[in-house]
Amino acid sequence: MPSECPTPIDSMLDQYERGGLSRRQLVLALAGLAAGVGGIASARAGQDPPAGAPAGESTFHATELNHLALNVTDIGRSRDFYMKHLGLTVMREGRSQCFLDVGPHFLALFLNATAAPGLNHYCYTVKGYTADSAVETLKSAGFAPRRAENRVYFDDPDGLEVQVSATNE
Image 1 (cartoon, helix red, strand yellow):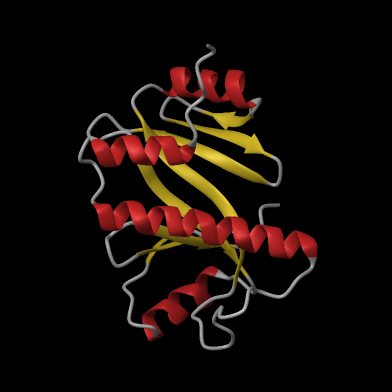
Image 2 (cartoon, rainbow, N blue to C red):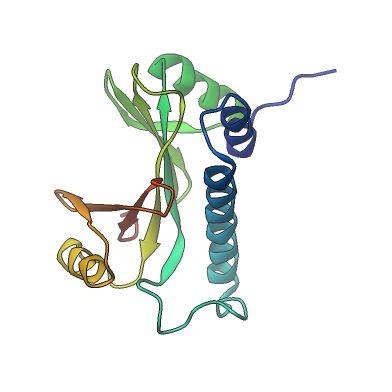
């Protein structure tokens, strides 16, 4: 029987089983992935957000899951895995990071010898994004955003790092 390629969900489950994620962190990460997939499907189909989705009162309006960033222990090994088994191609890479093309999105791999392999952060594309306005919006919503150049990050209730961004260009 051929071996199956681990998916991001398999990796999250493995991290949960090893104690690297709490049950709450696992559920929230899976919900984040599902929300991103639903948003992508709606955007591609030209549909409105699903019934019950916040309208107007949400802090941002995410239009798609922009990218996932993973902590890995060996950049070359992880890069080769995703290229061989998922057909991803290198956008750019260095000794401590590699960005792989996934159509209009990307997968970022970051070398991190001190953290357990797993989720580094995930990013949503939001309507009308500018770093300055994202920082102000997050502050007014009670968050303590972190800014790195044009990138803006904040924590979800369990400390998972979320990034907001403009569309990849």
